[in-house]
Image 1 (cartoon, rainbow, N blue to C red):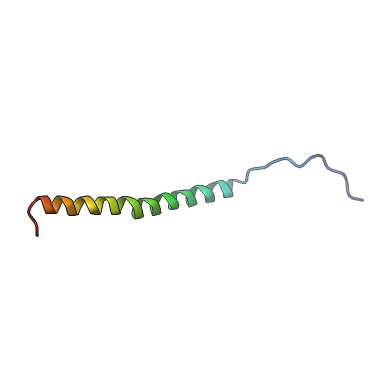
Image 2: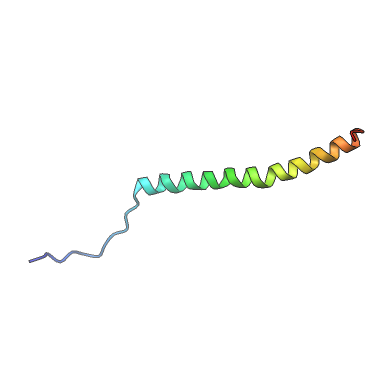
Length: 54
């Protein structure tokens, strides 16, 4: 016969903590490359125009 157990306890698996941290860092890199490069690109074009570039 199977023995009755107490309530299941919550257990954090270290592998999933590391995996989710890596996923979050990858997300931050993607946001940086898509958003901030576009903003920097627009500023660079405006600076070149002010410097007299055609």
